[in-house]
Length: 325
Length: 171
Image (cartoon, rainbow over all chains, first blue to last red; front, side):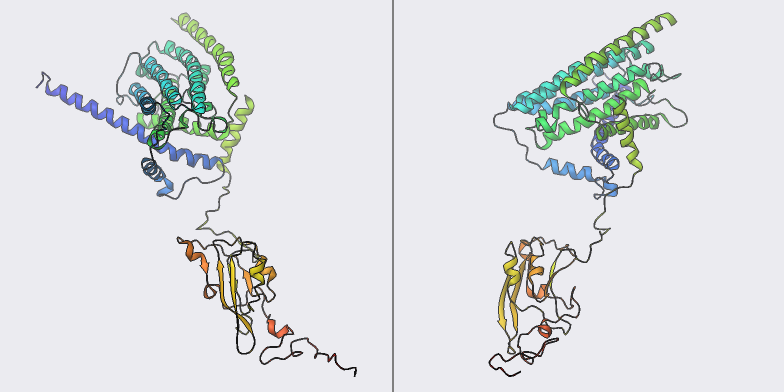
């Protein structure tokens, strides 16, 4: 049949199944984060958060989803309709695509690209289109301001993100995520590459524009920034896209700096989930604790502090790697 | 930079703080006896209703939510034929309680009066009247007031002297 052997077909079916399972798991995890975040914020603000719907309020997610599906999906008459509809899809698409190269365990993972790190960076760069197109097509000054801010912020921090990862790539000698994890068997990258870890994490926050770097949607000045005009499930996609971003950055931090699935006794997936979960909680803690910087402060911090540190880190790591070789 | 880390640490330490939330339907807050909640009409110690339909509460009410219609019984006592409070308007200010000369109308520590239909928020006299004396035990208006009603003439109330005949000079 079509020149395929049975084994190829079974292989194909298994890969497809694995891909869909990972996709579903990631999206469900992102949706659950809506509830996790509200509960954790409650803990840190000395209150409870949603605890009524279902056990510990976990069905709040289902209630929110049902609500958002039944909301009016309004497209403003002055908006550029086609672009307006496409924009929220882009952020979901690029973020989910980036998950393709994340190795969850020794065996689980969609593909092992030999340019894995570059692929992730490329996908998060493409994500900029989502916000800038959303801001532009809304034909609303606040949306456009938010979109412009996002574009500037994401493009700037992309630079430090890429530079901070160079050290990791130098140590592993590969862009392949799986090879990077395996190179950390002796020592997690966070120890030799601590400055790179800090820069990557800060750039990651800026990349998915979470608090404290949520200037694109700063409520006090820009109403809701680039998604001011969005409603219904289109807004929901931006919303879930943000949580997908949190999961992605947490997974990447785990893979690149904390040894991915490596760990004693417990199976690899549990280690991965524990490490990623820790960073997800840290994202929420950051939102609970920090204040938003001014826009110029954000840019100055990136170009004047993070960029030199990242460059020095790359230079020193390179020198050490050459000296050791 | 250090202050940011300190803020994050302090926020994290809030994990171990007691939560301020009172889980309301399971855990009721303490309401003091003088709490201004649902309005009731009380009775005197003899079990007769205290309200004399003077309409002072209705006049005092800043949102005009009290409606009283006066009637008079065979002994000459006034009583409210209808006494209606629209609780969807009431602001629980307590002015009616202050205005009441007979301590009939009183506010109670109860606020759980939610209804799905707004019309159900209008309470009639039968809904408002309670069996007890409320916050004023032992008070009976007609027993201390100088007004003559059936069975009790002027000067016969508690702590009341007999009326003076102003038309004569005799001691």
